[in-house]
Length: 135
Image 1: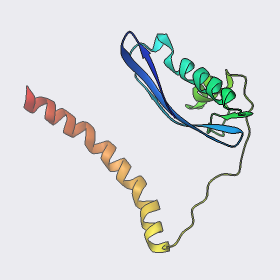
Image 2: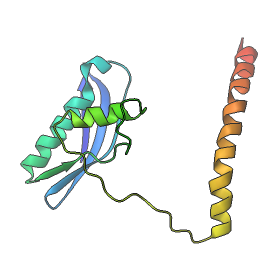
Image 3: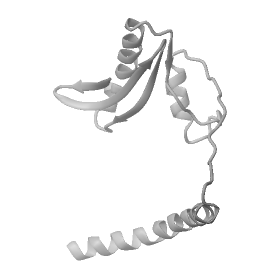
């Protein structure tokens, strides 16, 4: 089910949820930074919770939060937002990789961080060059 939050004719947030048995899952969501004070994400969550209840669900799963519940963690705000709906934190087993091609897996797992660091270093220089060219 697709849910949209609108304010004064502008879509500010959207989310997708589904129901299986007596449980509803919040699967994906996105929101705009414009008009954040309107709190479209709160409206979406309450709307989806009510939808789940109307469809006979006993559980509503917000899905993941960081396993680190320390307020200094950058993702703590996500946990606080979800906890604000009076839910319970339930920890499940983590994810694991099933390695089918060890050589490719090793190359990817070690190469990807190097690629990200190089890209981060090169990006500011290319942006500055682009700005100068367009001036």
